[in-house]
Length: 178
Image 1 (tube, helix red, strand yellow):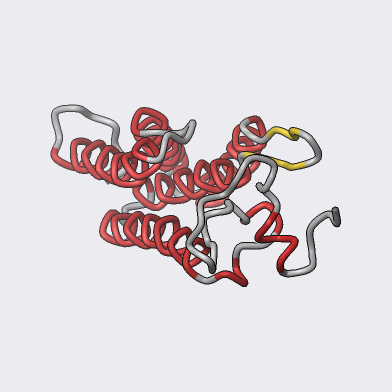
Image 2 (cartoon, rainbow, N blue to C red):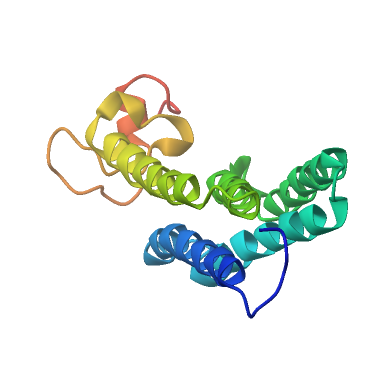
């Protein structure tokens, strides 16, 4: 199970699972025009699965080595995710993308450890969270606060007028006063 041999079925099961899981999440991100799309999803899951399998192949009877590699992956991918975050005009952007990259690494690690079915389930749960929470934020007015206020949830049905971007927030008494 821990061998990295392209002439064996377990190797291709790992590769296929990693690509499938990365593509499931990456497709959702790419459809929404987010920075981490299909390529990033596939590469992060494949890379982390490969690192885990390599550690397992070298560890033999020492699971501590695999745990060290897993710990370093968590830290390293955390830095990768932090790199996609940026502060613009006092608002931090890219936090969800950073969290998605971190989740992709966790899913890749699960695949590398042999939990491919669980990894597919986690990929579907991740997409459900990304899509479901966004739908909630746009349809439930009180969830659309602060950085989550996209101006899409309007009670009166009017389109936002020029200079009226903060109207939903002002209506709730949390935006700037004019």
